[in-house]
Amino acid sequence: MQDSTPKAAIDLGPVLDEGRWSGYLKFTVILSALAVVFDGADLQLLSLAIPAMMAEWSLPRSAFAPLVAIGMVGMMLGGAAAGVAGDRFGRKWALLLSMVIFALGTMAMSWVNGIGPLGALRFLAGFGLGGAIPNAAALVSEYVPRRHRPFAVTLAIVCVPLGGILAAFAAGQVLPAQGWRGLFVLGGTAPLGFAAMLLWLMPESPRFLIQRPARWPQLAVMLRRMGREVPADVSFFDSRERDKLGSPVTALFAPGFRRDTIALWLAFVSCLLAVYLCFNWLPSLLSGAGLNGSNGLLAFNLGGVAGAVAGALLITRLGSRPVMLALAGLAVAVTAVFASFPISKEAPPLPLWTMLILSGAMINGMQVTLYALAAHVYPVGIRATGVGSAASFGRIGGVLSSYAGAWAIQTGGSSCFFVLIAVILMASGIAIAMVRQHVPAITRPS
Image (cartoon, rainbow, N blue to C red; front, side, top):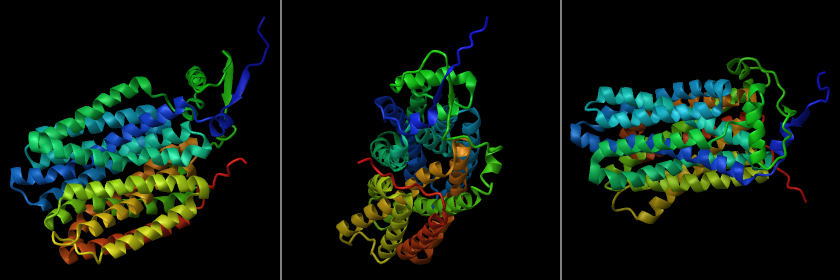
């Protein structure tokens, strides 16, 4: 005789959205954030190594511009592919595979002796670099309670400039002792070792697991680690994520998402153009004026960390629309003022480094909080695809930066360079204003 006792059913939506941000969930966010640190570090290694490669190979800086562009093309394709893979096969596995790809590509760059092989490997590394961040953002947004979600996603993605700080520090130590080849060896082995750790330590997204009944035992184990009592024989449903959206790619342009998708893509492409103009050209702009380019990039990234964290905290209180529009307006103002600053060895250092920190805070603050906005706009079934496609389209800005930066500096020096960035950031602010489904302000219980 069959047991007619109904299974216990748990609604995962309120458990995750209104639950406690437990130590276990904070640990998973830290793991995702550390993965992004390695992504951000490897992203900026090439720009830090280029001066040493120019000297060894007797090549001008212009010879390396196509490498920056081809790396961005790899990131475009990798972000789109890994986003779809994350929605289909799991965020954890897509993130791990992305890390392995960019680690191996970076490590192999230490063995090359010419621009051609270096470009091929930079494309491979870029493919992995582009896929890591969208899946890390999706993972974090699906672990964390709703009231902490914008801050947690931003805290993870802010690790891109934090990784840049780590890369600048590592370059200062490794380049004099082991050269650029040693820098690429370190940039490959470190994330590869961390990916092996994540294989055992990182759980899969609970909202991905609930869509696959065969994996409900894993979900039950995860909920117990979160401190939730779960019966042995249990079923799950999610009252907050019931939309049947069909193909993730076509769903991005369904009537409910079309406007936000287009606006997010425009915001990403313009904001990433500004970010990569600074990443790729600030060191050479400062070095050409007799200043320390690595320290300038370090100051820009330090400002970026502070601006992103402050933006995330304000979004939690005020919602994303007023905060992100304020960041956009301040970014335009700061870079417009920066255009009038003299950049030379004789100029007073304090105003220059202050402007570098402020511009980093506003520009990176905009860029990092865009990931939290994109993770909010899309439901679980298309979240990784939505974030990944926006980030991938944004890499067009990275490709353009490799040529737009050279054009601006050659045309009008630092003044033209920063005016160009101000105009681009204005376009990004307009695109952010077009998004309809902004993160609402979270009202704290009295």
